[in-house]
Length: 265
Image (tube, rainbow, N blue to C red; front, top):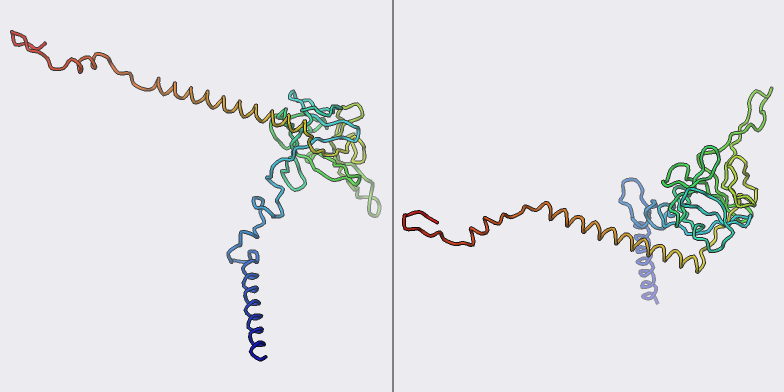
């Protein structure tokens, strides 16, 4: 019995020591000690607190509570559509910061933006007007407010003698009214039906349109590469020095013959 108790005690001690060593190695970075890459919490690593940054965009349709799908046109126009299978309503939502997203039309190639007058438009390039604050509404819908444009309002006076005034920041939201037209930002509220959007997952027809679009873009890219390759080959041919024919004929003629008067032909 004593031998068995000693064996059990030794096994417990050895197993506990191994667990302690593993636990000490798995601790995150502290001071100047070397970091364990499994516990690095940066934007590039998986499982970190910033996992959503720099990730793949979400392909969704933004369905407004007014029964319109938000669509982005190639000519810079933004409005709503009642069509279920409209390719212009297929969007890519990408996180650019914590709680901030960029919305891009997949088929139009333009970004949703709001200018300083509260008007929605489609921008060819990404800029600060293309950044929107994404928030989940209590009704289950999402709201998208401009990050850089808003209205500052007076909410009343505070303190004794009412010498100090309180200011409230009023957000400008992406909004589509009951006629499918965008509303200006300073006229919107987070509780309006026109400002509530439901991100919808793409259907089978949507996926088919996306796959055809990607295939056509890939074919266009391959065609451009082949054209560039042919152009480079032509430029190399023009740059190569031309060989003179007379010199080649002289080399092929062989040795020169000597005439009767002593001259060489």
